[in-house]
Each structure stands twice: as C-alpha cells, then as structure tokens.
Image (cartoon, rainbow, N blue to C red; front, side, top):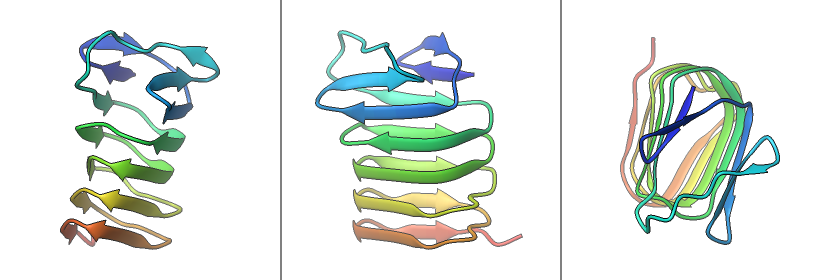
Length: 108
C-alpha cells in the first residue's frame, strides 16, 4: 500500500518529478504543496525530485530523491541517494549518500 498525503494507492514503481506523482504509469498528484509518502509494502524503485518525507515499511531496491527525509524499516537491495535530507534505514546492499543530511544506518 502506498499512501500519498492520506490517500491510498498500490503499485511497484513510483516516480515524483516536475510536481507530478506517477505510480505504475498513473498520475496520482494531489492538490497539496506538501507531499508526504508512506509505503506499507515492498517496492522496486522510488524516484522523487521533491517531497517532505518518505517512509517505507517494507523492502525496496533503490531510492533516489533530490530533497526529503527517507526512513526505511526494511532492507534496501540497491542504493539510497538524496541531495538534501536525512536517511534512516536498515540493511543496505549498495551505498547510501546524501550531500546535506544525516545518515542513521541500523545494521541487523
């Protein structure tokens, strides 16, 4: 389950770019200027150009964002990359990088 500003969706691939939220090719962009994303399942990939917070309660292959905090409770089999935002995650097979933010990596 994917929750964007309180509305529920399902899908595997999420792209947020040019102020549009696309889940598996469908535009689900809310009218709000503040975007918070909560995912309660495993997903393949999450690409976000700008949001306030990303919370993933499941496993993910990769996460890439320009701005926004990233909190992942499951495993990341690829990498996490953010330009501006804190990263809080568990096991990561690839790498974690942020230019402006803190990284809290919980190894299990």
